[in-house]
Image 1 (tube, one colour):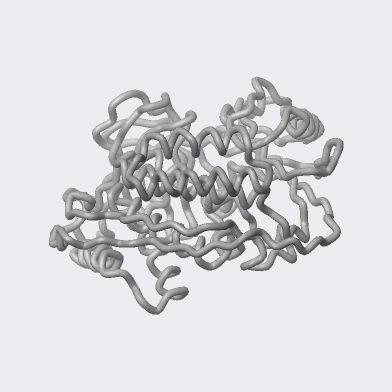
Image 2 (cartoon, rainbow, N blue to C red):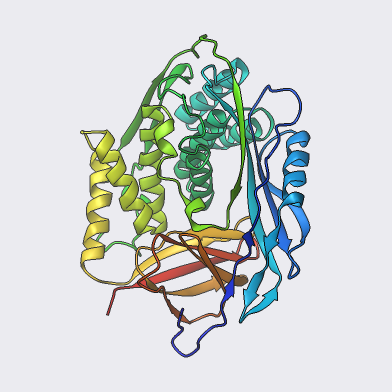
Length: 402
């Protein structure tokens, strides 16, 4: 059971899908696509209030994903043994072109080069505008979607838009799934030109609320460098594979294999940016995970990353409460806790519920302020999905085991 300090909450278990549906690729095979849908699974197992909440696509892919969802059969959510409605169920329709070698189109490559030049010049506002437009209007492959979101995460980090950077980073690293592009070589999809980005140039970049000390060299500068060449012209037959992802399952919150299918330099970029974003937001678990993965790929660790990792470990070892900051965007916010006992404070806006996503076990609790929750020891790989009004901000305090 999930226990509060004074209350035992009614637990609503999520719906489950009881059949399999083939997601058909619609029309001419000339691109990849991602369609993220949200809808309510009614108490009778039917679907209502379907809407598109993200992705990159043409209308035909939305139609194909919606048609597949309408063929799904759901076992409805239950609360105390009684079937209930479950709003906010999300599914991702993923249209994959396998054996994809010539991944990046020239127009995209030219636009990325312009964005990277703007970043180097320090014109973050114009770089953000062009990157968002590129992502929303001229992205046709998952690699491109990942690439532009990684650039956006760096832009947001540099311009101190941390929540937006967190979202862009998640979109980038979740774009690829291990095994979907079976013969995708790590160096087969490349961009052209080169760029340099300076990150975390002062000690103000680290949250004083998170670490037990804030002893950073104000002159510390991390330079990200990437040398990228023209896309290869090798032509291979293209095979189509589409799939439906069920985003309410905890495993969809973060795929450890997703970064591994990007080329090695881009993967390192993502990990470096992730460490810094997570540090400034106070998210210990993904911070330590990204640092470990970066250190496995790169023998030379930038000083700033070592400093962040040292401060994070010192904070954890001190057994003090850990504080992280959050913001609802597009109706929800995903968080990977480091500890099993936590409370939510400093809510500005409205939170509705918290989904405990552990393996395939999803429990939804109505939100109540100033209440302490504990995740059972038997539940593994847990993430927390907060739902509420957009722009709601709040803090999570994680407590050490008693």
